[in-house]
Image (tube, rainbow, N blue to C red; front, side, top):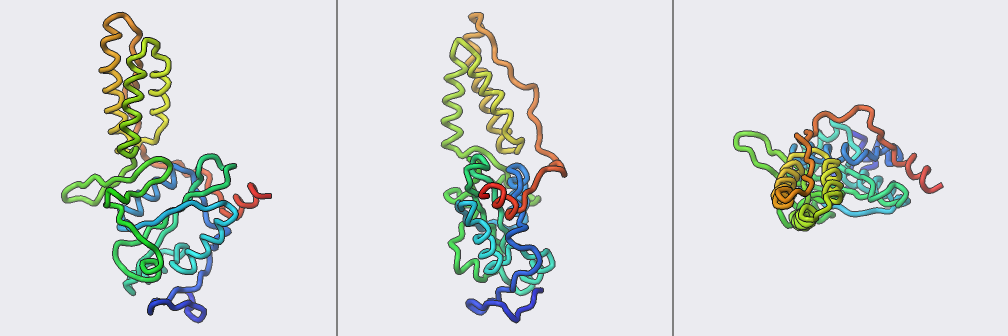
Length: 254
């Protein structure tokens, strides 16, 4: 554990001094890598959360604050030490909002299910299992798929309201005589990542489009072309670019 000589004490909990990695070297990962890391963390019990947006020029200060207060940059051994002392462990995830040039980042603070400490007293935390307070990033929501006798399984999908709007729009396009817009939507949907929740919604969407198109096809209209199978999200490529926050700030704000 880091030295406690310069630690800060709040509510009888000692917050260790941040050593090693700092906000400058904190990695901003690509969207797919970040979403997979969030699933892994929540599946392992970091299912309390809070989130927000931060301008790029304030991002390093935010990471530093969370590191000093909650230990988000601690090593695995330091996190185990917190657990032995019944302290909550926190993890921070960040990613781009829209284009990189827009200069905003979303942030998500995940906190362990067990343990108390500064993060549980200073932050308003929500349970990821609560359907009214699910984790949302990048237009997707994280949902749990219980499996009896197994570990919890989580997956990303479109929020229910957004999916219903998409379904209505897709069916309307499928019923149009000209299939080009409907086909473009099909191709666009196949670019979403292959998480279980997204695959399930996509299968239902394509089935509804095929049913809506069937009467026109019987009258001689061109059919829609659907992919033979959906891809699964498996291993992530090891060469995906991860950008240190300090480098990103200098690159975009210089």
